[in-house]
Each structure stands twice: as C-alpha cells, then as structure tokens.
Image (cartoon, rainbow, N blue to C red; front, side):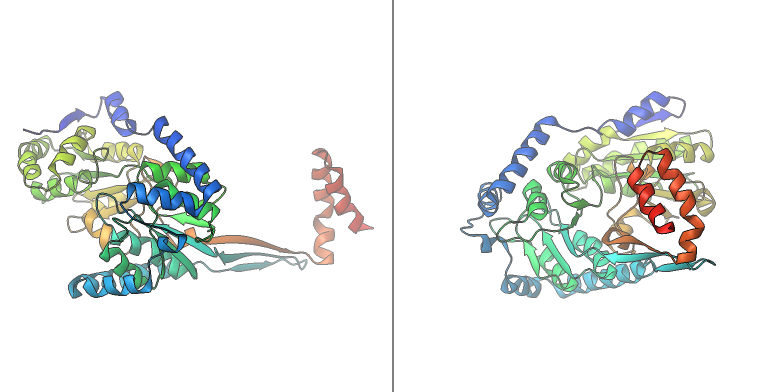
Length: 429
C-alpha cells in the first residue's frame, strides 16, 4: 500500500533534501550529448539521418526526408477528430488572447536638453520550437510554445519533434496546422537542438529554441546556449499544493497531486497543510487512486520524491513554498488570494478549488512552459517576451551632449580607458 512521507516543518534538512534531490547532471548523458553536438556540427544531415534511423525507426535517405510534407500535415489534420480539433482551436484562441495582453510598447524619453532616450522591442527573427513526443505526444506543447511566438510577431517558426517510424503523431501535426506552422522537422533529442543551433543543408540555422524535453534536450540547450538562444533549462516537473483542508474534498487534492507525478519517475509533488487530519485522509486514500491510473508504475516511483509537509500555520506554508519555488503552485484555502500575495517564487499560481493545474496545462491561457528545478526563484514562464529583444536608443543633441560629456570623460579616465575619454573630449572642442 503506497503512502506518502509526512514530514513536520521543523525537519528542515529533510525538506531541503527533497527539494533539491534530483537537481544534478548525469555526466554520462552529458558526454553523449557533447558527442551528438560535435557530430551534427561536423556531418549535418548525415548525422541526423543516422540518428533518426537508429533511434526512431525511420528509413530516411536524404535531408529532405527530415521535413514533414504538406500532404502529411493535411492528412494528419483530416484524421484527427472534430472534437479534438475544436478543443485545440479553443485553446489556441484563449492562449492568443492572454498573450496579446503581454505585448510591450516602445517608449521614448525627451529630456529638456534635447537628448532622446528610448527602448525599442524587436522580434527575434528565426524561432525553433521543441515539441517532445517520446513516451507520449504533446500537442499542447505546440500550442503553448507556438502561440506566444506568433503573437510576438515572429514569422519564421519551425517545429522539431521526434518521429516514430518516420511519422510524426497526427495530433502534433494537427496542432501545428492550427498554428499555421508548415516547417516541421522529424528530428528529436540533442540532435534537434544542435541542428537548430548550427543549421544543416536541409535545416536553417535558428536564433532561439524553446520548449521542454528530456534530459538530453535540457543538457543540449545548456551546452549550446550562446550559439543559440534558449528559453530555460527545463527539468522534471513538480507541483506544490497549499491547503487548509477546509471546504475541499480530499479526492480532488489527490487527483491534483498525482497529475504531475505521472509525467515521469523523477517528478515530484508536495502537499503543505496545517491540517493533520486532512493529511491522514490523503494518505489513507491515495493508494486506491494510484491503482486505477494507467501510469501507476511511474507514479509509484515518483511518489518517493514527494511528501506531505505539516506546518503550524499557513504563513509557514508560504515560507516553505517560496523555498520550493514550485513550477506549479495550487493554493486552496479560505484566503487563497490573500495568501498568494505573499508568494514570491512560483512558475504559475492556481487559486481556489476550481483552478486545478491541469486546466493550466491545456487551455487556461498562460503558457504551460514554466521554470522547474526551483528556477522560479529567478525566472519566469514562457511568454511573448521570449520572442522579443530590447534595443536601447540614444540620440543626443549638441546641448544634451555638452551637459553630460564632462562626467562621462571623468568616469572613462578613472577606468583607464583613454580612447573612451578621447571620443568624448574630441567632441567638446
């Protein structure tokens, strides 16, 4: 019978261990990724074809085989049921509506001396989206990555995703068609990141790649950052639930708790509560829930990374949650909104009993591509900002230059940069 560890909040070392127990890099995987990157850089399409044929069961002969044809995309779209396509379209509309509100505006400051200082937002021109499709296809990742890019104004967008026997999942292709994306490459894993970073004869070089993936993808993004822009280095998924156990069925909490644990054996979940009786009810019933789920083997492993944390009050729950810096945070208490104002570290916050994390994964609006591994301490979820860059504008008038030149010259002098000083001083004569 599966049961969760129940940890008292004063056991800080145990909590710390659980938070950070899988934040590490497997050196054997890293070494494999480095070799893949070198091979793709050197051999291009030849390397990709070899890897796809070896691991994906494809039978590619030439670089053109790596790209899904229009016929494949249209056929897949026709095969997907109308209710699935309708759900995808509704999700597209909601995600687009949300991200349109994020679009930033240029600004210009005009000083009294005539200097003009500004900030211009520029679209990143060439965007690659990584869409995982190993243990299962993720058309939701197409929508959650592509729509913010589309809203930002990006025009050249391509998808990289693994195939099976040379075929991409119909649902992924259907989601891509709804997004209007026609370049879909049958390349996954570290090879996908490398090919986007360097380009090959058949694949263009891209400026940035975004989207979640397995450890090979995450390490490849880390290794190639600088050669190509990345959104984040995503690790195993996680969820934290803060609840007082009042006015909420424990079955709902159990379902939410398990929703992230079915992703993989390294996923984790934390339930933080000040209600010991409620915690015990969870522990009594959770095993029966797990037995009914299709991915119970995965959950029975990932639950070992997870725990119920008993706190003296909900303020302490907030304190612990901020240390966890969860990817997903549900707050289901009598004062959910008030409590949420004290949260400083979270990828996304779900308030109240009718806002399960799963609704955010598929259709709420914000992207489900969120910081994992406690990275919510310093980073944010995917948004239109990931597909834009800022350019500063400085336009000095003669009077404006004269007003600030002396100070610039002084600062350049103390740093020992004579040419900097000269470039200012020469204009004063």
